[in-house]
Image (cartoon, rainbow, N blue to C red; front, top):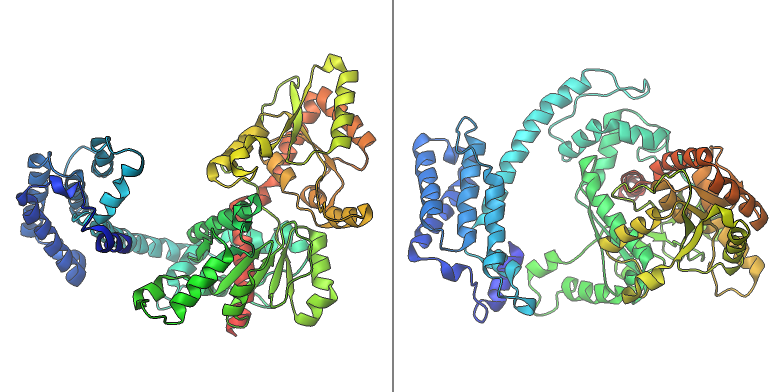
Length: 582
């Protein structure tokens, strides 16, 4: 609604709402009736539509408008249908129609894009018209949302009481009824309803095996409700993901650890605190410039603009720290976390915690002298997999194609594989190197959009067997020994997790990122090219072995889902945020 109001203020004089121009004077009278109803709603709530006379009059107006004004702006039709839905939500015994009014309202909104089909390219202004229309469809949606929330709270309150009447699974956690007077009571209820997910994080997550273990309650866990209250201190806070370079937001690593991670935190509201997580998709200097402009009371900046600009309590720096943000948001008032991804550098100054990709990295960062002297915390928090559509690689009796999906060319390994396949021509297996740099050339090989992410997973699922060894890691180092020392210890295992998530059998080299994924299982690993070729030939010729590796890989990838990794990040943030608040 604020966006629409801003657009109208700026452009209405030169860019009128073309949909509203279709309305006849009689539409204005119905709009006035709706605005009066919404005004009464803001004062009296649902009670303003309880009387049969009010309901009959409003329904008559809405139905009459739908029947008589089909040549007007479709937004008016949709608004009238939404009024009928709203009345039906309040008076649930009222039978309005055997048609699905919700979808009719949606289709009416979309109809304007089809009616104005001659407006193409830069002339296509559907969302401008949708947000600047005189029809109060957004206000009605908001009123309907209030009804839904109140009904859900009533139902969930009864369900919660029943759940709390029985003991929690763990004898060490004794639940007590939730106090409705607590500030974040609805958040607490969501945590309690999803206690199994949080129990897994606390007691079964493999990522508690290295680095600091996030315990939001501190040393001693008391009750489940205390745990939920501790998590819910994050309710409503802003978390910002940002990269410290002018182009960092364009990289594939920011897609995963910035945009996707922010989306995962927002979606965690279904299970816990509602966090206002956002990724800043621009140069970090732009964010700092706008922050100064909006928070230093410059002339011409309204109070509303100040409130609308980002003001995070937690900042997560991806690959490179945003130094100006650290200056503007000093540590002690704002939490600063560093996520190096594949930049194996020392922890920057003024960082509160580091998110390490491997178990070894979490231990090394935590034990490093600079971390210990500055009190920097180290948590093991690897990358999630991106198989959001649960795609699966084909499981055939014979393999037709095997290969790799990477921008890097491991000439030594790939040449050896090709020679082996040529020497065993009876296998009739084709080697394929799927290079994102070529497939996504229009974005310089970077995977930026959700569509590209899905395409990567589809390309992986086209393979039937893969081989994984890190290549192209830390090419700026001249010393091969130093490069191997860093990469074998700190390089993320995400490529393997993505392969496992689609059920792709993999020949895996013994590098820490990969070893973390297969830890605790009997999944085979290799150390040399000779061992890799021997295992690869066995996998290509043994369908039962491929089936076993496929099912084992899918199981090993489960802890790396976006949902699980987002919940772990919530635990880490609550653990740190509790201390800064204290």
